[in-house]
Length: 98
Length: 207
Image (tube, rainbow over all chains, first blue to last red; front, side):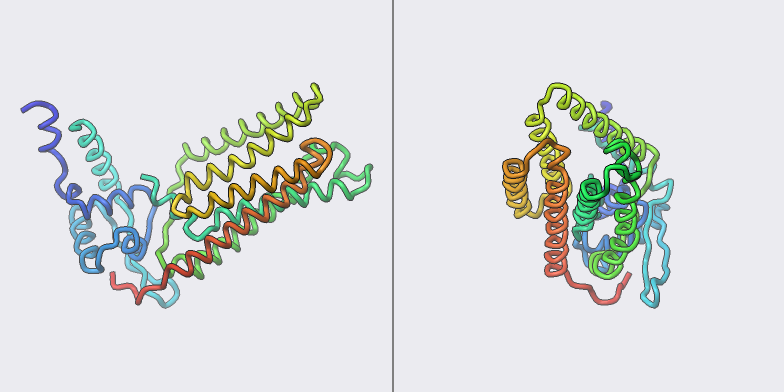
């Protein structure tokens, strides 16, 4: 297997799914954001976004913090250090492949 | 991917901040023309730094209270809250960019005075101010096509000021800053209005 094919087969499958890739790309550009921002930007349904976030949280890539702004529930999301590193590796691998 | 960065101006607050800054500069120009010759303000002309609080206090106040109030009242409940990362690199980039721009303008003014090329000085300074808005629209607010019409209006306004107001770039700066400040501010308010019209707060968060 040559280098390019190895780079493709070695892509992180948690990040590679299009929905999660969009989420990771958005979170990589910010310090933190709330659930509503991701909902607005990704145009996913609540359930779909929640399940992708749960998968990313399970992989240790995203930190989810449930809090309140006044009396309104607020879900804050940010990439973990491992998530940021994984996304950077994913970008490098994709660049190497194409 | 610069989409999160463009989100910062989704409500027009970036343009409003620029408008406030230009209006502050117009105030500086106005104060310079009405205060007596011997006043501390005018002792060193434009080289003095006394005008800095007049420019920076309104900008700081707008950023601290105005932008926060708009974001809290309209943006965050409608399309979400975002906090941006502050890296050392971007701080340095901005500092270098501002220093280079300031040095460029100072060199241009010196060159123009020395060679009495006031027409050139005025034309170049207006072109720079126009290019700033064009860059802003191209980089941060491309989805609003009407802003290119604002750019044309801005160019025509600057041309009119250039033809009507006598003197060099320094003499024409107060009306130019007033005009540009109002246009930037108007553009920001129109963006906010458009944003409010096209977005609705969703039902309570289900995340």
